[in-house]
Image (cartoon, rainbow, N blue to C red):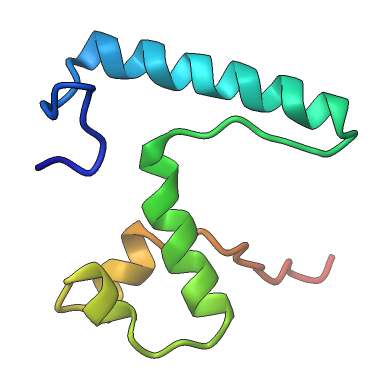
Length: 91
């Protein structure tokens, strides 16, 4: 059983998945425009980092359990997309 399976319950081919996601994004852009809402296209590769960043931003402490990683450093390095601010040296 696949989370995102086709109508036959099988996994999508790479080309089939891309075409389906492109169709979905096109419809989302159209619906957002009709509702006068902001919408930015995304891919499934964006979803996990976004979820991790949202959990960290909200102060949740179960990020390791949610991602099945054993290292907080790995999570911070790979998935944390929160804006990192760096101090600039005085001129």
